[in-house]
Length: 157
Image (cartoon, rainbow, N blue to C red; front, side, top):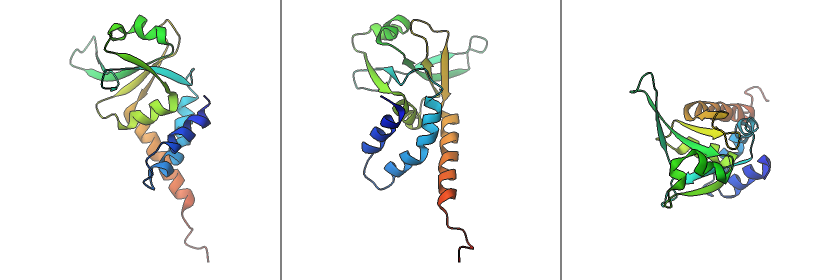
C-alpha cells in the first residue's frame, strides 16, 4: 500500500469530530517524510491478547538506571519470532500495520519513548529509531506551518 493511500485511510477512519481528519491532513507531509526514510511500507507489530502493542524496556549497559521503552516494528512475520522471544508466546499476535499508522499511533502512546523499525529481514543490526518526542515536535511544527499558511494577512484590503 503506498503512503498516500495509507494517509487517506487514516483520514477516512478518523473520528468525525470536525478536527481529527483536518489534523491528519495537516500532519500528513511530516508522516510521509519520515515513512520515506524507512525501507518498508508496512511492519509487523507484536500485540498482546488485549490488542495492545507489546512494550520492551531497554536498559543502558553502562548505566543500568537509564531505561527507555520501545516498540519493535518487524519487517517480516518471521522476524517477530526470530528476534523477539515474546513472538513465540501463543498469547501474542503479530499484526501488520501500515507505516504511517504506526507513526500516527506513536504520538498517542504515552509510555513509549520510541519505535524501533528493524529494516533488514533476519537482522537486528540495521534499525531506524523514531523517538516519540522528536516526532511530536516535528508534527507540531507541521501544524504551525499549515496554520500560518492559512491566515489572512492583516493588509488584505
